[in-house]
Structure formats: C-alpha cells, structure tokens
Length: 190
Image 1 (cartoon, helix red, strand yellow):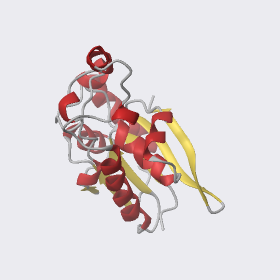
Image 2: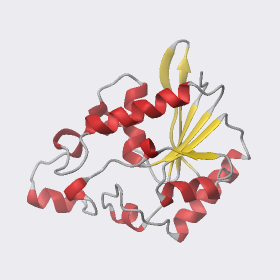
Image 3: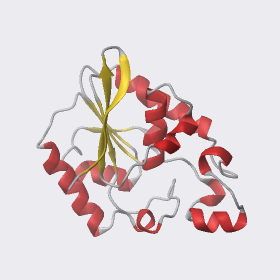
Image 4: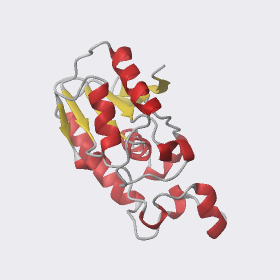
C-alpha cells in the first residue's frame, strides 16, 4: 500500500501562462517551466519512490525528466489532462463571452470528456498507486490531479474546484490514522 502519493503539476507552458485550457494539446514547457522542473528535482534531493508515473504529454514527462525521475518513470495514459473538447485552447474569459455563467466543474465541455470520465481515470491511477510498496510520485496536470485528490478524499469529482494547483507545485496525499487526507498542498518548487 502506498504510504504517500506525491503530486507534481508540470512546469509553466505558454498556455498555462495565458490561462488557456490545455488538455490533450501536447505543448512544451517554457524556459521558465524547465527551470521550475529542475527546481523540483533540487527540492526532492533524489528522494526515492516505489513507483513514478507520468502523463505521456511532453509538459508532464519533461517535468518528470528534468526533476530527475525520467529513468524510473512509467507512462500512464490515465494521467493525461481532462479532454476539453471544443474548449481546448480557450480561456475561461473567452468561454464566458459565449456562455455567461459557465463553470467547467458544473457544466463541463462540449465534445470532450465529462468530469465523471476523468474521475474514472483518476480512480484507476489511485488503484495502481495503492499497489506500490511505498511512496508514489505522479507527474501530471492541474485538473486531473485535482480530480484525483477529490477521489482520494471520497468527495464528488466536482469538489476538485476547491483545490487550486499552481504550475510546478508539490502536493502530498497521505493518511491520518485510517483517514485519507491532504498532507501538503500546492507548495511552490521555489
């Protein structure tokens, strides 16, 4: 059973900087994002994990590699970001001009993935992590990691809206006695 699950959101990209929804578009890290990823590695000081999983998208995989875990990382397609369908590449402000009052967490996206579908993927990652014999590292994306956290806490997936997650941040899921808890949240790699 996993003792702790460490969550690493990828470093900065052009779209994370602009606020554009970046689901399956495979864009690279900015130079700042690459620097942030290296800082994650410094913060971890070569910490050992029983299992390291990464999204196959280059922004997460490159963050994993630059942090020093590329040699041990396994790709898990379930860690890909939420598929935003027609809203891919658009900011919330742009979407609100077309759909006043819209909320990603409540209203979802046309021609994309439902929050329930993303939660099924998150649950699969958690099930895989729970089979590891120690701490687990997950390198992925903001919304899928937030949904995964809601699943960990046995909350509805839409409650993921309550967990802000910055680029190149570190968070940890663990236990207090037998209760699943958030041990650390949204710590900067700086």
